Image (cartoon, rainbow, N blue to C red; front, side, top):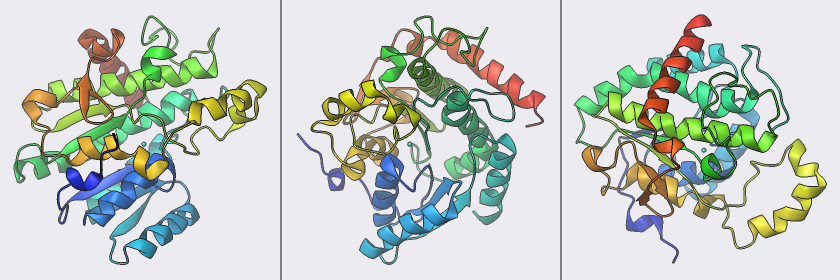
Amino acid sequence: MAINVESFMPDLAGRVAIVTGGNSGLGFGASIELAKKGARVYIAGRSESKFEEAVGKIRAEYPAADVRFLPMDLADLASVQKAAEIFVKYTCLMVMCSPYEETKEGFELQIAVNYIGHFLLTKLLLPCLFEAADSSPAGTVRIINVSSDAHENIAPKGGMNFEDMNLREKHTVWARYGHSKLANILHAKELARRYPSIICVSVHPGKAKTNLSKGPVSSTLLYRFLRPFVEFGAPGPRKGAVNILFVATSASLTCLADSGGYFIPVGRKVKASKCGEDSKMAHRLWEWTQGEISKRGC
């Protein structure tokens, strides 16, 4: 049964949200609903022209929407640092199944954009989040990592491959995507352990028709054959973002009971994969990531 966001989303006036990749897909679906409820929404992304197109669509429906552009390339750690500085001063972006490519810092593109860039952004914004948590009702401040059931279905069986985090050898583009989505879950789990005053969760948004997989993989014969079956019955980005919006705004979530959890549509807290529930792996991933970004001056 479809769930209307009006059934759980409160008035968000006075609240601030950063949505990475908010100019299209599920990020756009989340952005328009957050703005509709009165939140100030920062859409973080690389293209200001795409932002202008997105904000035009939002304001066509909600002229008073407070939506702002936050320039940021998650594949570039210096860009993430600059974006955090801009946000502090003025106080679901994902890449799916891309061919093997490394960022200028040497990270495989999918894990760089889907996980490492978000790790750094979260780290840099933590002082703001702590300040907001201290002055807000419990459970108001939240970090939502958009993961996927791919963390279990197509990720490497042993979990995070700390010997080859780029998965250079004998791995498909799909395995690298699942690897990055497992990292999102473990990141939320470790955030929750370290920072109990903030709700930190991961979500599987469910099926949705988005442009996430419109890349080189979408031109393959296998993908063109499977796509109609994969997308059959799937909602558009706005309805597809309901689970993200639920965990981001619903008053039913609490720090004590829900932080660190993994949620599937709609608002159902379930066990992640065995690796996704591995607290030792979560801690090791945190230490590895912190070490890698520190080597690069972040």
